[in-house]
Image (cartoon, rainbow, N blue to C red; front, side, top):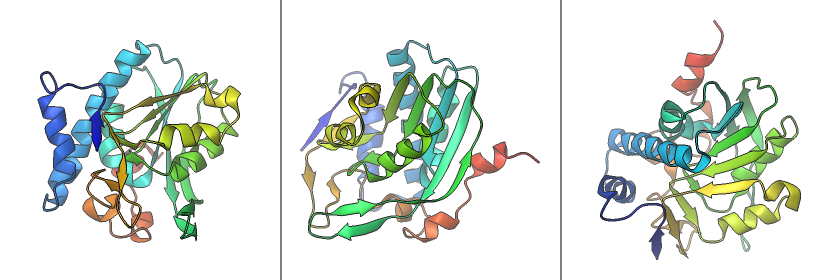
Length: 227
């Protein structure tokens, strides 16, 4: 079952259409990518409202597969004067198939400097087990101490926010605010969220499987790397 958040059928029909497009099995790679970019922009605008435009020094973090579409959409509308970027390439390893316990080590990263970071915005295509998000947050929190952490995703699983907060000390977890358009309550036999984002995001974005996608260098990163 899906519950929409922060949007209504009367006012946000295009956003709902894009959410539904992600779940369609035969949508093209280009349309799937474009839907994520458009949803990123809508999430960014919603985030501006929630934050009141009061970001201070900001870092936006994401997984490599989300950088060129979802994260770029957020970044393009974020009302912050200067935003540093952090992109992570994660592996995914199943430690216990019975409990679906996963481990997502970071194998590569691109992290721009940020001074006295006030706001961290972590963008993810879907927050399900929270494994990747936890790993990225843990890595970032060793270097920065933001006053506010926004975790932004089009879709979240019903237990994801609570489970993620339980992984961190309460003093840090109380800084978390979750921004999403939909909360899903069901999983399939492979533990995937239904309807979620229509399956595994990597092949649907045209990036291959969980290993192939780590060979992809986002255009967003290329455009910001020093010459």
